[in-house]
Image 1 (cartoon, helix red, strand yellow):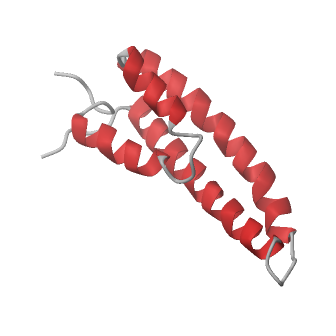
Image 2: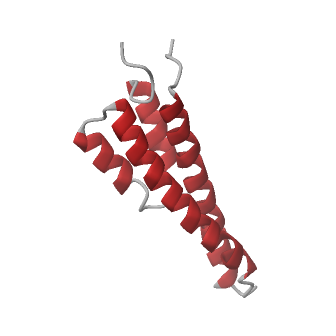
Length: 105
């Protein structure tokens, strides 16, 4: 049975989901922009949203690392996960399984 998430753990989980969701929207928007459709409305919407979500994720990662006392390699891995598309959600799931988002006993 998994332990409940701390407030910092919940913040990280929300930030990871938002970062991945906006990445997906941006990727779909780029597909529409560079296809025969040529519509860049999605990029204009999801570009700034993803920029904000990325910054929120970085701040949430640093706050979570400090509050939950993550080892340096966990923090580095979380920051690097924001760069490739859609990696933050599986990383968050792994952190949750490892107990890194829960109260340490």
